[in-house]
Image (tube, rainbow, N blue to C red; front, side):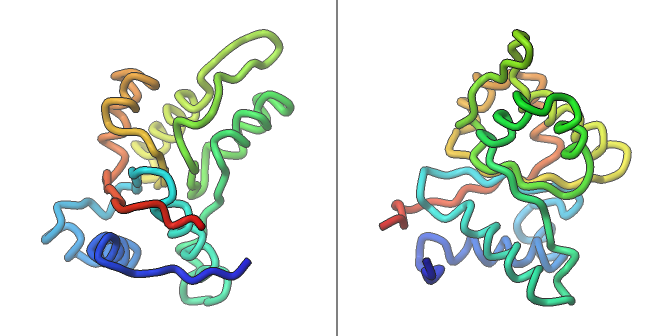
Length: 178
């Protein structure tokens, strides 16, 4: 299905900030209080275009050699949990390094691997946090959850790491799904 990505009053300023970020422009830091060394955590209600934005960036990076540095793996958090449940620790190791978008954080269930239940997203965030601290590894996240809901679901420790690792940005507006 080919759909156009619509720029309107709800997302125009947001898209400008995102373009500054991905162009590594100091204006992102100077005028928008962002930090280029951090990843992005994009929040907003369902259907506002959070995931679509990263899909557009992914497609651009595949088609243009000058934009290959923007390429990132994309995995939905529900799929991450499901694959962990079938493949185990080996699967997690594939997502500790490299630039990754964890799509729709908060929609996943608690993982159950050989009878051990775990919020596996907490673990992957912790592992990627260690790589962020030592290697500057960037991570991207989309979520429908608010700051408060993230803290309730993942705890103060993970939330504290999220603040250190990410530029929090909100994409507002009505659902664009049709």
